[in-house]
Image (cartoon, rainbow, N blue to C red; front, side, top):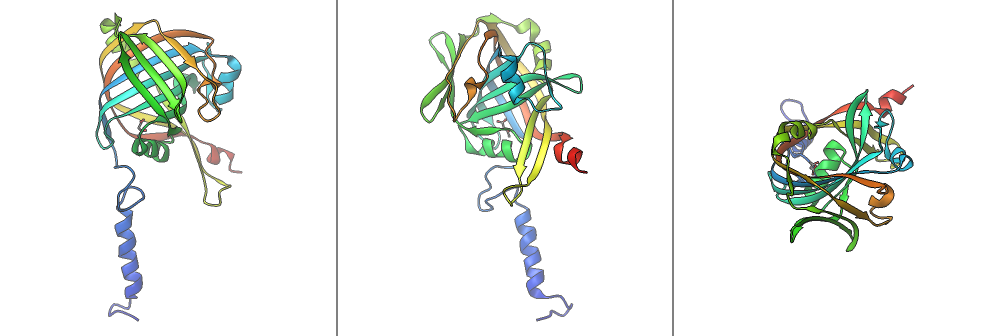
Length: 267
Ligand SMILES: CC(=O)CC(=O)O
């Protein structure tokens, strides 16, 4: 059947239906899994343990063209997100290595475990964060800030440090800069044939509106347990280098492709 304009009403109807569905940020359209950013993080409590691992373990997780930085430095951090627009509160453990990219310092995040679905999916689908579901917790137990990570009820990591022992207020500007070190992730997504790579990109994550409200240092301890489902112990602790606590705000929203593996490999 033709309309007066000669257009098929079925086709015209289908086109407007498609437009309607394209307004949604993501599936499912009845209740998208996450809202469009930007996502504003307020009063984020962070426990950061930096340690030396083995050269072999570090090399095994770092993709070219990144180069591991000197010292085999690895960071495991707990973040208690107290107040986040669009996501609500949640807790996350991120595991990263110090690298260089194009000769400049960078942090490469190779795995993360969260207790909330919405930021896990947003982080994976948009930015390419290697996020999975886990059971992280960050709390003060007596005078000790205690970060734990459980996987299916089994504890795989324990980090402890005296609560706000050494005040680093005189270094806030320097640490605020440090928090903005280039952060990179590897976004890997297969095509629907479940075989061909569709996306293979190194992404620089945009971190905006950073405001450091407090920083503290002190000794820290870290213990990890080998577990095939949650391989935090794959980067073994040779020695702990530093413990830190930060209280800060920031905004996440977008990223930038800094290396496209499929483009560079195209004949
Ligand atoms: C969207 C995100 O990627 C959030 C996060 O880092 O937890």
